[in-house]
Length: 210
Image (cartoon, rainbow, N blue to C red; front, side):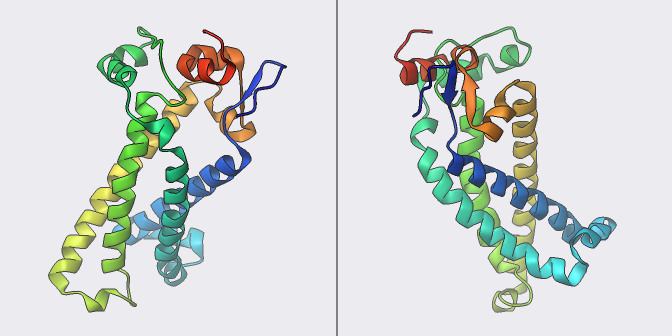
C-alpha cells in the first residue's frame, strides 16, 4: 500500500481500477442486451449492439468474460471483505447512516454495505453463469430437457434482477459518498477522506490514530 507525503493515500491499484471498469462495462452490456432478450418490448435495445442476431451471439460470451474477470478480482479482495464486529454495528445503524445520523468509528477499507455487495455478487454471478449455460442457444441448450431450461431461464432472470438492484445501490452509494468515484478513477483518496470514511483502514495504512 503506497502512502505518499502529500496528503494522498493509494486506495486502488491500476490493475484493480482497470478490472473494476471492465466489469462495469460488461455489466451494462449484459443488462441492456439481457433486457432485449427477456421481453419483446425491450427488443429495440438490440439495435445498440448491431441487431438481434449478433446480440444473441455476444451476450453469453460477455457473460463468460464477466465470470473470468470477477472471480480472480474477488479472490484478491476477500481479506478486506471479511465480516467484522464493526460491520454488524454499521448494519444495525444503516438507516441512520443513510440519513447521516450515525457515523461509524471503526470501518476498515470497505464498509458493511460494500461487503454485503461483495458477498452477494459471488453467488449471484455463479447462478447467472450456470443458468446461462443451460439456456445458451443454439449451442448448449438443446442438450437439456425443456423443463430444466424453463427453470434455468426463471432463475437467470431473478438473479439478473437481484444483480441490477445490487449494482444500482452500489452506484448510488458511490455517487452519494463524495470522493468514492474519484478514488476508482485516479486510485487515490485524501487522508481526510480516509480518516472520516474508513478510520480503521486509515490507521492501518498510516500507523496513525484517526
